[in-house]
Length: 238
Image 1 (tube, rainbow, N blue to C red):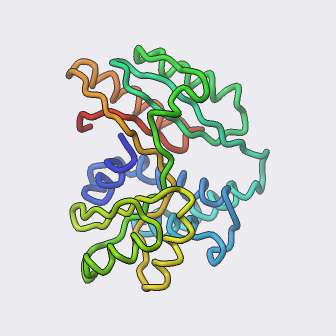
Image 2 (tube, one colour):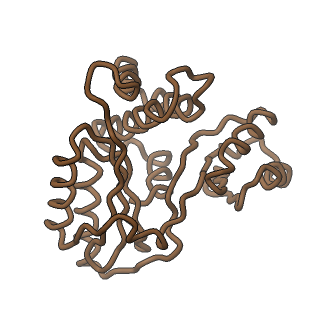
């Protein structure tokens, strides 16, 4: 599912997601945040948010600590961040972010996932005009004045502030991530989630038969141990 719809699904119905899948998603976020910066929470805002989210969903502490250490490169070979771009059935664009210690294995597996679902892995850069790379924050709206909050976020560089099912979703250029973070700290607001995401600038609607194939492809990719995040431009609800 798309990043935003995935987040909404997690907040609305964690009980509907298999516990193992839920833990995997949370721990991938922790690993990714740890790999991208310091293990010190005071110096790594993304890691702090990822850990708090994992704790909220009762992910065991030892699993969280293991994901942090893995991200810091302890106890194993170094991991590379590699993006893969392709098209699923019906021409749906699929952008895959991976972190792997074996690129040969990873690309073979991802190519196989696409092939099994009547899709095809493309060349790097083939989707550069389909997705925009953005900073995105989610904040519980309760107790926050919408007008004042929106002004603060726009002042800090946000492109858009949307109220969505009890949450403010703040979207900004990726370069404004630090400015938004600082403004949130200044007004003493802690986000429920914070990340760099890829947002499609056009959507694709498919028929029911094709939708089933797309769902299979996304499931295959999200359950791959080397895959960190999957984005798509599917308009249909999953």
